[in-house]
Length: 292
Ligand SMILES: Cc1cc2nc3c(=O)[nH]c(=O)nc-3n(C[C@H](O)[C@H](O)[C@H](O)COP(=O)(O)OP(=O)(O)OC[C@H]3O[C@@H](n4cnc5c(N)ncnc54)[C@H](O)[C@@H]3O)c2cc1C
Image (cartoon, rainbow, N blue to C red; front, side, top):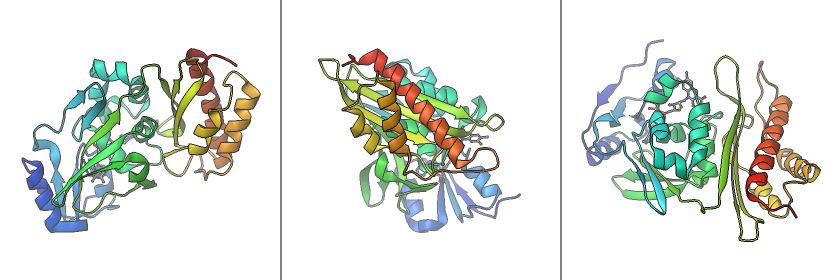
């Protein structure tokens, strides 16, 4: 299909972009890599009167790795993650995501921040960023605000982004040095989108006991989300005890709402997700934890 008519602006500063958005409210859309927005425009799922393209704003495409925090700018492409050595050394989970998400063409155009703003039910980047405790730096004419990604993603393709706001960057705190992390995904065989995905980051205390677990899932469930109940139950669970672990995972997954379609039923997705979580937690546990 052909998109409904819209005006395209290419501001050269964030302030100019914020002014444009402030003047148009909900009838404006931000364009980053366009890998989701252009499809939505063509299918007329979105019909903005104004599209504000961020591509000419200097400095938005940078990724900075500082001792305490990683900052991924709004126009940093997904493919750039794999080329940023200090980033993938610090956060190897993002390399797993980059290798699992979409295809090279989409990753060369699509941005990490755009994928978080899209909050697709099968979003790989958003699940990975959730498990890394990311927050979103937002900017509007009202000023800046920072929102934890857990509060930013409120449903399938729904975020708490307000009209007039631009996500300037994603901020990810440095994990503790003993952290281990992984992203596992079951792909739809033809389109590559997630049937079930699990992002897991674990940390241990000096005695080798699990001291922190951050787990996010997507693909199988209605929208990317953390599993706080499982995270806290795991702190008292020996990851080497496979029956105990399987029971904890099954109990945590039971109340969630699952997606289903001609390709994969809700029950199938739940089972695949349980297997991914068992595998990730067993493998990571064997790397970092002392068995009790
Ligand atoms: C064929 C195909 C396969 C794909 N497969 C996968 C997959 O397997 N896994 C996966 O995770 N993703 C997949 N994607 C989605 C891809 O990752 C997109 O790039 C991503 O969802 C959006 O990033 P973008 O930069 O292209 O954003 P855009 O398409 O430009 O924008 C997406 C949405 O976010 C908003 N937005 C973007 N940036 C900002 C910002 N800075 N501030 C405020 N709002 C903003 C836009 O207004 C729009 O609503 C696929 C896409 C395609 C076309």
